[in-house]
Image (cartoon, rainbow, N blue to C red; front, side, top):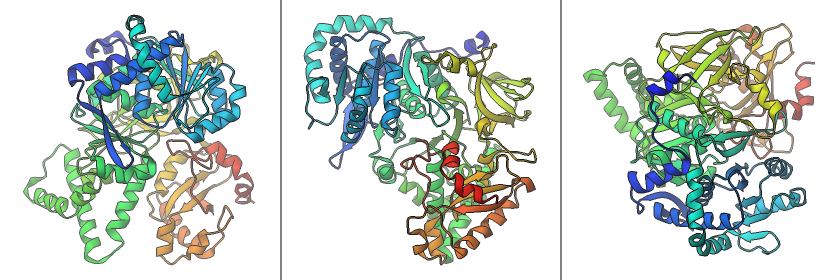
Length: 629
């Protein structure tokens, strides 16, 4: 990273992540300010900074009494909660490494991470997760203590409850206070804050070593590119804190002093939005697609005048967006039309989302351009960004006052991005925040990155670390992309690229986003590697199909795939329609109809709702082969 770039963006004087928290508690706000909220027994309960600081004192006292040293590892298998924040802040204060484990992992995957990281203590969030760990407990000899949040457990041996930990820690903090504060002063930029293990769907999981400064610098970059987030904002948290995207959002709230409310679960997000009335949310594309589909369905299904008014309002919103993106005012006529569209349509949609939501930050996958445009037409900003676990996470993001739909935005201020030819290894272009030109276009290739947000490497895995860093220090993202209008555009993952038997390169994500514009298609999975033509697995939009006369019984039964001529013809109409937007070699020639959606529970999707390509290809290999007979 060049010194010039860093000097032009002077960092605030913070050494560690816990200092963010303390600064918000004592300087941005007061200790009695509410920071966190969650629903307990049907009611929303608030937690002030003072409440959380008291819990942190208890936890740091208990951790010190257990003899944990700086650099030791503590694992968490927890849902989003105030407890996650308190445990994490305690670990950051003492220089202990947080090993966050996805609750959706299998028992064996959990055991692998516990053993690979050498975690000494494990915090477990619910009875199901505790039961899962019990299955592999004998395989995890390094785990000295298991802290159970469920209290109806038989304690002893190495099992204690979280309540017991707090009670013990409350009496221990005073005795350890001096050593705690001494340890806190020792924690610095280069110390590892967390290990976040990447998905093991294409191999053994790898623990990305992310430092305090990796996250600190990413928060500074976020604030520089999205300055509209302030201490007055309220953030609704529902993506798992074990994922780097939500974790960075959490650290950003401690930096800026924004408050946080925890959604009960993903199924209650819509209800919780209306209750909490957030101004900000981090979201994955699939969630935004679902919101788009529901709003479009609700606005048009009744037909008649209601549907005409709805579609007219969207048209007005689109005209206003075009002018806004071009830096032009609406003028008196369009302003009056927009005010009416907002009163009749937009305000009602926004009210269902709490009435205050001003910004979604989209990450974890490619957002279909029409979805981002749809929200902008309503007057809700969706700022799409790009990054990986290894980059803490974001590298680029669309700026608040300049949206280029279909791109992932401008290079962050403290970072550099290069585009490299995957075959010749020639670097086509190198871009920084300061070399930005709104009309810049580049060749396509693999995206490389440098910056203070890039991980130290993979824990205990030099071989894999060496694969992703080259001799010049560039981190190879494995994503293919190019620059358009000065912003980065992601084509697909390098490992996802399909090469037909005729030598044509196909990027499945682009094709899938094209077909997902159809209200008849809920999910689609593109196939075609080493094949003469492209096929797909399609999950129909069930409610839409039933409304259009498809018998609901078609979707019942145990078979994974549906054979129904009426349903196939109904879907084929849409496939032919959206094939017209594609090159001939990209067009879908045949497809399977999957009865039920791909899901996390079935092992088909990641926690950010991306389909696991390798898993699906192996799982349905026999059915896929029949498409090419």
